[in-house]
Length: 88
Image (cartoon, rainbow, N blue to C red; front, side, top):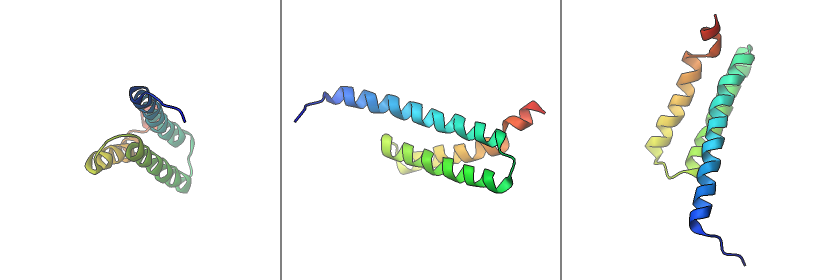
């Protein structure tokens, strides 16, 4: 049996959650930029939303309301401010 320092484990989980959530945010925007099929875009939005909410819920101490607010921001941001609108 091994003993791991609690602070080290907390720091590793914090760094992992930051990178994972950042990847999900950037991944959602990038995927929506390249995919033009409406059904595929809806599927991507649903998939990234579920992954993001799960990541926030499992890897942080966020309350349910905070998880809901962060997830709502993920859904609203790419839909209203996609890169295609910026480039056109």
